[in-house]
Length: 181
Image 1 (cartoon, one colour):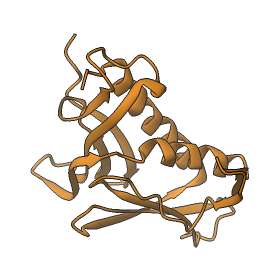
Image 2: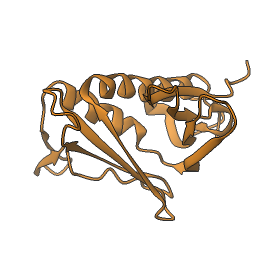
Image 3: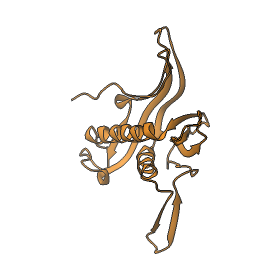
C-alpha cells in the first residue's frame, strides 16, 4: 500500500481565509527497524527520518509562502513533542524519575529544548502572553533545524491539544508504514 502524499494540520486561519499549515510528508519520511523486517512497535524502531514544512496558503490560491522546510528530521523528537504536549494539557510542569544508574532527574516541560541525536530539528515549547487578553492559555512553539533555520508560531491550549494529537497520528502512520533498515 502506497503512503499518503501529505498530512496537513491548519495551525491558524484568518478572516480572509489565509492559512498557516503544518504539512507532514509521509512519502519523503521513513521509519526504520533494526533488521530486515518492518517495525511493528516503537521498541522495534531503529531510526526515523521525517520530512515536513510550514507554509502560508492564501485564499486567492495565487501562491504559497514557504516559511519552514525540513527535508530530513533525522532522529526526530516529534514523539517527545507529543508527549510533552499531552503532559502540559494535563497541567504538568515537569517529569521526575530515576535513570538507569539510580540517579534522580527532573525534566522541565516548558522552556527546555528537545534536541535530536541526529541532524534533526530542535523543538521548544514555552508559555506565551495571551494576544487578546483572554483567559485562554497560549504557547509558543519554536523549531530550529541543524542549519539554524528557525520558525516559531503561537497556539492556544485548545489547538495545542489537537496539534499534539496530529503529530502523534503522523508518528503512528509512519510506524504502520515502517520499513527494514
